Image (tube, rainbow, N blue to C red; front, side, top):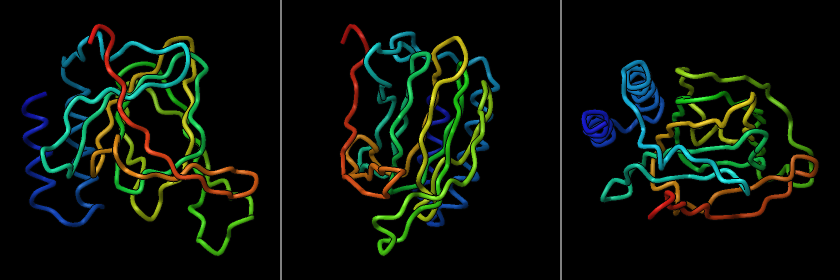
Length: 184
């Protein structure tokens, strides 16, 4: 993981284009998932109440962050955005991603337009978001918790983000914060 963190830090500090960053981070994350790397057990534990986001690394300048996000069987997120770029790799389990077309401000009061869905399984990596394509919901599928390794362009626990009502397009702002691994 130390090499992965150093490599991502180098990319983030040397590339300004989020599409190039996400492409290269996705390649690095694919390599990490294909290796024998194992997350510490305390950052793979689900909560019975909701999905949890454990910080694995936050850049000192908040330019990027690395997290373990865990959903228990059957849990899902609300429809949300990230307000930054992000790359997700599935470490364990599987997730169903439901994407929506990012609405323009003038579309308030209009239902979100579905843009497809995909099931991501262990070892697969996706660019989950860029600043212009950033609305989705995620659900754990299968009979085991889903664990994803997420890399975001910023400190995702402190970014002011959008929650969407898919039926009306109404927006509510939130800050997700970080969860503490069990035992801390």
